[in-house]
Image 1 (spheres, rainbow, N blue to C red):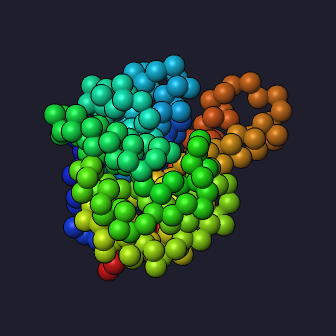
Image 2: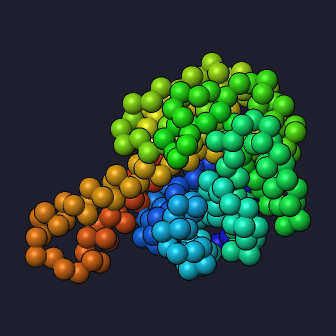
Image 3: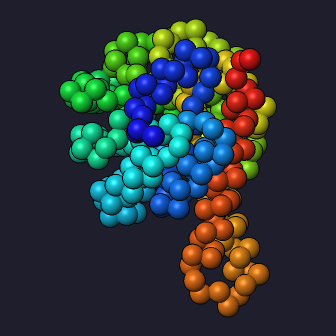
Length: 280
């Protein structure tokens, strides 16, 4: 299937009043597992590559090329997105790498600086018709981001108008890197933001959100749901189980393959939940 654009995928989801799942890729087995789970579910997905993972691989080119090849061979629509970019040089390479969107992450800066950096980046991205996401109200658990901060609806409206961004990641109670589903979303705040903002809303830190809250959030305006840690927890546990059960195993395909299969199962679970949370 032809590689899709994030812009088109989000637009279709918004028109249908539903959410698209965006899964973070750490290595090629993640991308393979994500697409396998999506194909079983018959649902579109976004493959995300973060700045941290780019640094882990020593640069974006190789991992991005692998992700693009996997996406182009998928039996379901797949888009490619660069996640949590703080460096302008990486934002500028988005189209060159075959990606159709990116997140400019200046949320740790003071509000006025966040606006200035984001607006300038969005203007540059317009040349390549890239879909740009940004964050307001720091979602905890990532770098300098503080747990507990919340997005203010009026500020969110002003931020969108001032920057021209296409998607807004909001802080309503979720946090990055949570390995258990113990976060509770402020759904009333979500309603207020959705009423104030006219661009699609994004939920980060979804791995730590209770299933009922996640399904409710998709019904109340969230259009892109980011999932990363949930996949990594499943991957790691599957690898550990194989090594414990087969202590003499030396072929990494055996245990990494188990990790890939675990990722596919988690993707199916998430996509099933989002489907269940969508209006009939």
